[in-house]
Image (cartoon, rainbow, N blue to C red; front, top):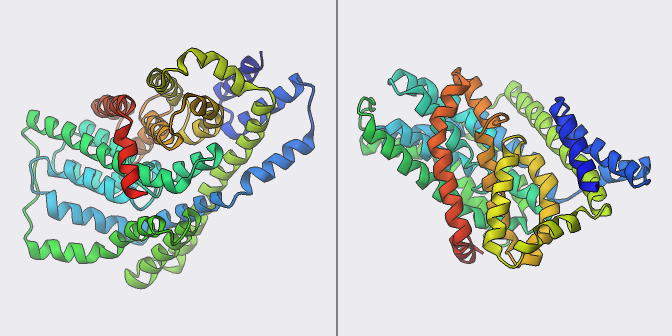
Length: 426
């Protein structure tokens, strides 16, 4: 009964268009009334506690770093670097999208930010060269979701906090899966290029031009090295890494590239504050819900429901992946993590599944949900920036969603794809 009340209230208010944070709060209040446990002090206390977490300080700092990178010229220089190296290949701008997706993922950690940056910079180029907009925007959307996988990742920070998993280990574990996502996109795009022979290429640039582009983007390329190297060497925590990333990005944009004026800096701070307020209010509301979920013994109900699969970790993971895929079509990644991660973790621990491995799979599947309607946050961003119809983007992104699904299935069947590289990096 507790599960039905929680899901009924949550999904019911979401169906009426209520913001997810408020729906989470009302679902928690509904459970309180059902359990005869309503207390406004508990709600207020958990709201404050939800946002009062040292690890969560990394979220606004990484958002600030991402805004500074996009406004300070880092993203544009990385795209130009990719064009000089692979733009001359048949379908070269598609490979530029993939290469830029990986490079930007190592800077921002946000799927929406990466997709918006890629679309704004590359769609005009793709359109002017006669590329099919359905295929091109589908590739941009699919490349954008690499952002939350390759560190730094805001989604990994949130998962680590709510599921009590090491954020540093999640960062290290996401490197190889993120690169595999890029390789998956490369295979699918190469197959597409074999079927379409009318793609215009860019002139092949000489090594002198490539070296100039490399020199121009070297400051941007140092950032992921600083973050990963610092985390791997134990120099700083993920939160401290976020502070370093933010200060570095601002320094490069203001002093080195000189593209961040006082007006631009103010806009960066406003955008950062707006994005942070949405994320942090979601986190705070989710802790109230998490408190009531624990009090209502919902995790035990989930364990009883999935009990027959606990002895078979592979079947359990397949079932969870299917569940997350269905939920991902109707819910954004952050609320999915906030609602389901605390509920799933007792089941995962009982089944003996590595929590870091589970976190990586959870976030990858949740990211794929950003590419599926009706919510499809990344799809909406690409549609808005590129000014193309939703149906065209869905048609173009479908092959990549299928390829990502096959990749996740391989990771479920062979967990060492994730776990073995983790031992190399950590």
